Length: 416
Image (cartoon, rainbow, N blue to C red; front, side):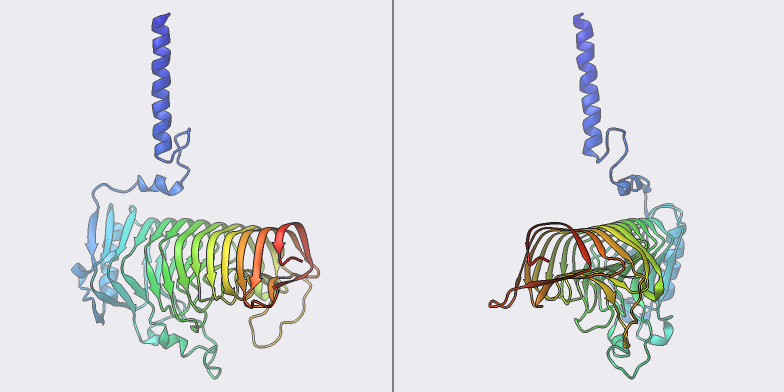
């Protein structure tokens, strides 16, 4: 009997140790990780070869065109079994538009220690992209250096700056198209031609430690643009631009933005959705932990009239505003064009939105604006522990609420 008890105790110890080892590595009791990116990290080759762009002819002198050298280094790195694509520090590499295409033979690390500068001649661009990573799985891009879009030459030719100029698109500085299991860390992106960083059609993304900057008056320079992307986390990042700090558009699902510093800029936006009478879907969006300073909007949902679809299950929580215009806003009459938009019955349905633990000051009279559709009212809007005061000490912040169905209001000022 004593022997059986000892065996039983021994088995309990073994099971306990096994269980603990699973937990310590981020795995659950079934042996699978709760973090899908950790799974992919195990796929990396132990012996990674370094592909230094200098070994392929890159000069890094701030004037020579290093595009061909980067293309050659990438071709070999992508086809190898385990690679580090290295942009060395203390150098300035000038690149024309370039696409780093996959799929690659194995997981790949991209180390940007040096600075990457955009080629100045606008005729070399297709007006849409500058640095593109396309169809690559299991990729880590990390920095230390600066990615500079040399945007000034584009901004001065924007129709939003010079009304005599035709309205044309400008390149996005850094684009990830159709990538899966992607880590982007410690990048400094500045002065984008238009948007700074775009995730399009990606899945399983972790972006952290990003610093994104451009002048407050630079046109259309969104910080991080997310579209048709699922399971993405953006954390511990500082963004100050001439447009949205973060914009989340149609097809995006399971988006988490945490510990975000925003300003200057247009705030954190879901949308615009439903432009040109299109159908839009976004769901499971959480902004948790953000400080916005002197932005032209705070947390915003914006949709065009005439669109369709649904924006649902959205959470804004633990947010602080400092002298922000329109701190909380839902705008279903969004119209970003010179001529007035015609009134239309169709609209993107907005439902199940939570505003929780939100404080700060508003420079606009209305700190809360729900400008919802008459035919598709905003539904299931919940507000808890919200206190926004006027930046003007002798004024009281107000709320304007049209066509909104509130589910719950608890400790809210101002309220509908």
